[in-house]
Image 1: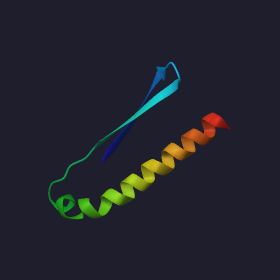
Image 2: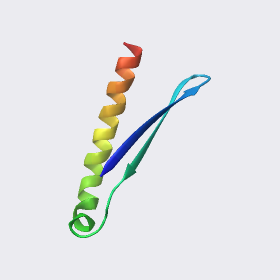
Image 3: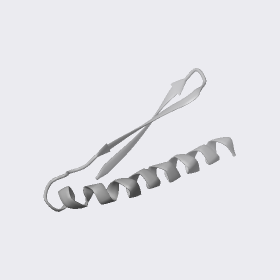
Image 4: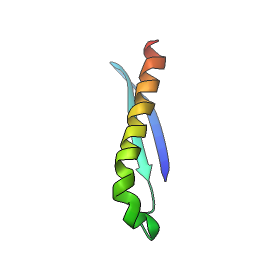
Length: 56
């Protein structure tokens, strides 16, 4: 899995976008649905950490 964060200037601050790429073949085809909530949780944590560094 590869996660890319991109930050662009925006009139109201910074616009952040996230792109996630991964291979859903073989083993991952079966565990993918179980991993999705963990990945979302990790992304939320990353965004909270970034927001606290920007505002703090």
